[in-house]
Image 1 (cartoon, rainbow, N blue to C red):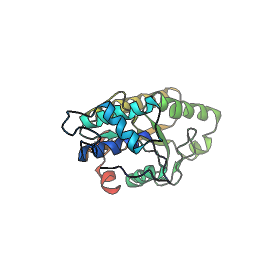
Image 2 (cartoon, rainbow, N blue to C red):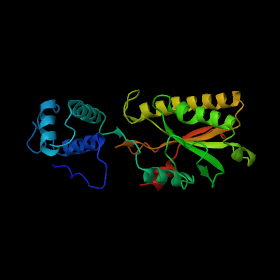
Image 3 (cartoon, one colour):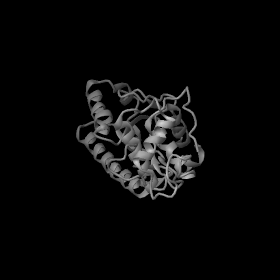
Image 4 (spheres, rainbow, N blue to C red):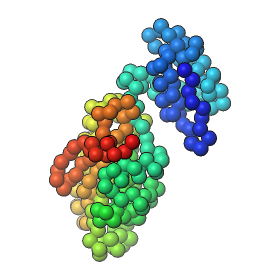
Amino acid sequence: MKPNPMPKNKKYDSLDVVQQITQCYDIDPGLDGLADPNAAELSRAEFDKWMVEFYPEHFLAANARGYIFNRFKELVTTGGKMVKPYKVEAEIRQRMSALGWDPSGLSIKKDSIGKWYDSVNDCLIAKTETNGDRLEAQVIFPLIKKYYAGDLDSWVEQGVTKMRLYFEPDSRVKDFKSDLKSLSALRLKETKRVRDANKLLSDCGVPFKIEMVYYPDQLDGDPKDVGLQVDFKSKKTQPNPTAENTVQ
């Protein structure tokens, strides 16, 4: 079983290789004669042979290949599930459209607070990730700073003070395992973090409030992961099957 050749029009990264070797190993544990098909697991030496065979000029650093090998082992032990990142704007637009959000002003740049207006739901939209302090550094603190600098006056004067947050769990999997219950636990923990952020905005006298949070479906190999949408207006926290059914 050989992986597909590297596409010329796509930026290839280590996670793509992780997916490829996992798929190859699932179909042929012997990796086309490069490994022992009867062994309990693939050894690092056998993995290195596979990389030399199919990626002789890529990911040559020991730490890069070590990362790929370790993520491969994670996938094997979790039944082929991997937390995938959304790096392409088109993918994010698809999910937002399925939610009924207006993605036409999509901006995934760091300084996008106040620049992304959803005309369908009459609110501002922000996007960030759960890792580190990005919620605070990329959304909450810039919101407070821009409000007191007067940069958001035009929105406040028009009554636009609601926000929706596209919140993507860190795909590097440091604080949770790549299974649905672990991912769900992280999403719920991060939802409390958003509630705390709303309280901070209120305490600071900022009229803006995050009214809705969406966590995209991210577990490859698990059809039960349909993402999670949290609506603070109705205080409901539930999966969003509509998004999963709409977006392929």
